[in-house]
Image (cartoon, rainbow, N blue to C red; front, side, top):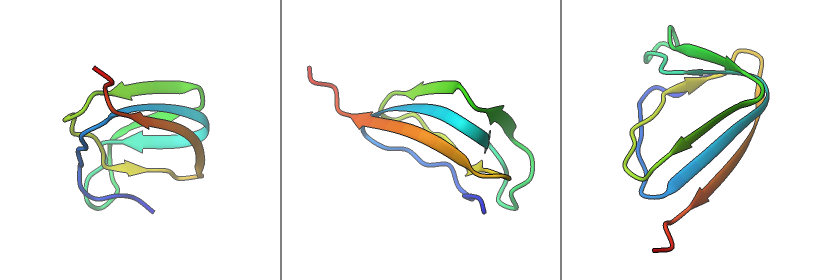
Amino acid sequence: MHTTKPFVHDYWEEVFLVEGDLTVGNDEQGEGGKPFEGYTYAVRPPGAWHGPFKSNGGCVLLEVHYYDPA
């Protein structure tokens, strides 16, 4: 299973790939992209386009979403 389009949101997002595999930037058919394995961290500010995503064997993600308190 995979997503097919990049997306964006209006909040901060921190993502920690705990275990498994996650590929970022695949095409609409699920091909290509950059693969990552467990113990990978990413942070995205509001307005940052990201994805699509896929996982071949499944993964565990810890995601934290928040708005800037300022």
